[in-house]
Length: 69
Image 1 (cartoon, one colour):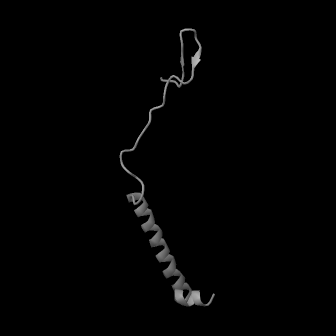
Image 2 (cartoon, rainbow, N blue to C red):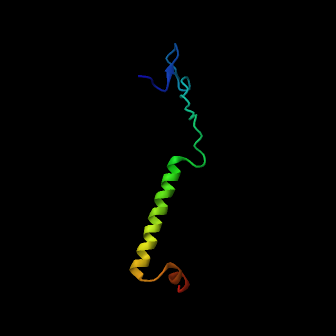
């Protein structure tokens, strides 16, 4: 098992002897990713269903509801 420290020949600990492995993702994940687009689409579908449910339950359109606040 590899630990985060080593000892020198005198038994003194050298806590900084082993450097961590650096992981670099070769794929650019900034901007429009597949995950972000799926999440955005799901929120949009939820909002549309909530809008339709609000109109059905209130019996009025969204424009009418917003004008009569």
